[in-house]
Length: 546
Image (cartoon, rainbow, N blue to C red):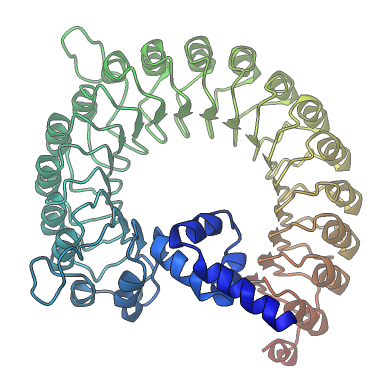
């Protein structure tokens, strides 16, 4: 009877249309459950094959079959496809107009990722463009051999998005090919393409008026490039990390005072700007920029060493919608500058104050930002438990807290955090040397914690790690490097309770071969273990884990 029931259920599934089965599969989020459906029913397998939109191919031999099996692919990731070269890529793709290929077989692929596919050159890219007439986005990041000829091949596709981060052979000529061939380009990343100059950026701005996002980080460009980019009325996001020749003086441009003012006066749609390591940027440039760009959501001024509280006051006054503010290594920022940010910017969700000279009074101000999700306070040695009490009193939505080398933090501060910020998923306590097992007991109350860094906490033992293992069952990454008092007791607890653990660092811990063997034999999800200088583990102990 059960056999008949199973047969009729199978027949019922087989009778459903592929569209209906694909709709049902769309509601199955867990990849393991989707695999179970495919294995249980050929109908589900056919439905997924017919409706699958994305694929990541790991071997070049599997590429032809993947393209045949999944005819509806719109996104293809070949970044991890070992040995991929021009010949294998061209051989896997249909040839337009070939008598050997049935009509209409061209691929519907719109996005292709070829990051680090160093074997693919202009011939392979030409074949790709010819076989994918709908191609819109290509990622060639870290293809260090890619040059102007590869850019010419891609230009024929009329792309909207192009990432060529660290394509070291690309010059202004290659960028010109892209600009002329892709007038509808909306997003471009030329980070680390050091042969591109102001000339290439100027032509890009002239030929691609639809640009919304540009990354020119680490280029040897000057304020002349900002002058060119300032003409792009739809520009929303510009990143220029470590553009050392850009400052807020700039070239005199008609009635505009400097290049940052030019960006602000013309690019009123700008929502994100990255000025990290632009050492020439001062308060005057920031004041000019934010006076016109009131819709900025993200401002990154990491390592802009000349900025003071005046820049923060201008940001707070003009950019009330700011959500992300990165101020790492801005030494002249203090609690006085953060007060207007906390008062006027109620939408603030992320702030990075790493290596800033702030104190508990600054955290008292920031505590009024109830929407705060990410708070980074690394190397802020003046922060104490009192500051954490302020934060925990009103920042209940916090999901990431970085206290790297905040040496004044004690167990009492962690008690406050665990009590008021129960949604924390990422916590960095490295080198907070006053933390003991009692502090980890408080941390164990954070049930959603997935990433925990405890490097060089010399006062914690296996007892504290046991508390973490029992309470934080969602833990995925754990760093215990140089926690010299952690022993096998901690490993046994992790073996029993931390079944989701994927990455673990136990270098310099006092663990033995027996504890190590039990740990590695119990954690099925474990992918990466760093275990340098385990002096208590013998050669036989390492051999036992094989």
